[in-house]
Image 1 (tube, helix red, strand yellow):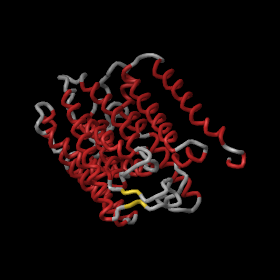
Image 2: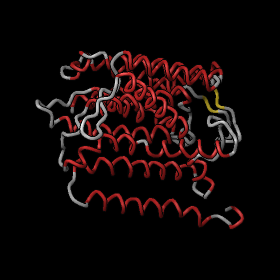
Image 3: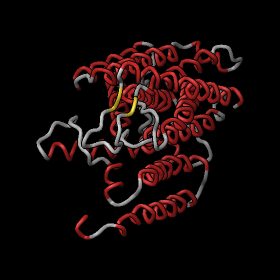
Image 4: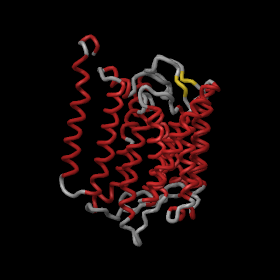
Length: 366
């Protein structure tokens, strides 16, 4: 655990310290987010914050090579593939932050970054359904790339309020880390040092290091450089975990939970971004729009529309993300009805807090 704590601190410190320099660079080259109809800020804000998070992640990778136990994960090319894919993805996002790439170019960049990771061993080896299901390699490769693209775009869709995306990814990373770390103790022999746990520890550090600069009122946006990077790293952890963890291994729960949790957990921890992306695609398709055409009806916009302040809307969406993520993880650690009761109580409290905003609206606003 000490080495993971060190990775977290290094990633967070480097991200925090380099963010002001990235902000100065963004201002100098004109990488500013203009005031658009769908935005909530009132003045242009610099972006490119994702480059600082990339530096934080790469610093954690370099540091891990010097650590006694964590260095063993570099025996596989996986970490190199993730670092290369992350660099490609952040650079594509950075170019988009400066020059506004079209959707097809960005999708091509995502496929190339995902393909790079697959080529270096970051891919599903099996599916933890009905025991361990092994599909043909081309199918598993296609599924891997699909997971990367869906996760990247889900995070990108939710990046609409100060601190929202970084906070949700931090929550997801912590939930992933806790589950993967504890599950590793059950291996024979026990080995808590894995690609998934390292990536989530470093990703958590990057998010925590960036948040002080990104909380409302934000001094810097992560931009597509950050949203695409966070999505790729989160997907890499997902792929490493669900593709390599034996679902028959238990933590403290029964067989049925142990079998489905590796599949349910990744969905639960990114449930809010996935929900927002799904609703956006359905909404835009029904209107005859292209799914990638932006609008101002994401979950974060709706929270503002029902009367919540900017900060309260972000906190409530963080709360919902935590309920789904840690609620799913709790099934791995606690027996009996406790997790279900906890989720229901927390969900009811979150629902009451969310709907309080409706009381401040006039009938004409609804």
